Image (spheres, helix red, strand yellow):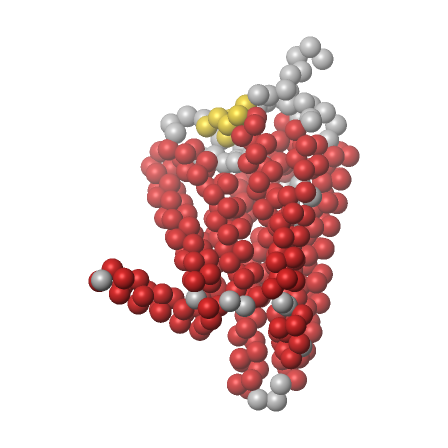
Length: 313
């Protein structure tokens, strides 16, 4: 036991390949990160400035955009720095704890928010006459606050349990961020019980948010199919299409984490899934919620006209 010690810092291997490949990846991820920041910031700004978007649906969308900015900011800058460094990238123990906690907490909050947005669409489509009464400003503020608080509180113990382990095998993580699976592999303690509890908690979070989402969309689809006119069905479905698309991408990426390939492929597989969650999904969010939404497009056009007038004056 004398050789056992706990790591004070970790080395991130990042991506394999030549310097040329790293520079190409750096340019690609920097571009996607810039578009993510700009696109989601524009959505937040337009929702808060334009009175036509002062409704529960867009209120939730602004929080979703804020979450996407935060999630990608927790991961991508560290990843970009690693692609520029000639050798291994190191991250302190405190930095690793903070990164893992924020990544998991923000992800949990996003799942809760997606479930809330699904219920909001259910009320809008299935109970439109009482929509403004049910989804009033007090209710919206309360459910969003609860999702943020529960998201952060729910990840305190999992992160604490992860870093209570002793890391003696190595301090090298085969990833571009502090991935919990890689951390558990480095531990010389018996992690079977911890992994089992963490797995159950992850299933509870994912399934707990997926169930109200599935129930809501079952009722939504059933209600839309009962609308007699084709134009009415298209209009009703258009209010849910963006959120439904985002749900498929978000939950699809997460479910890949539970359908693991062989252990020899697990590290590269996890990197790809992590890229989907931390890079691709935040990048697509502005396009998903603007290209199919006439209200947002109109608000964007009016905001651009206003900005141009201000610059001319």
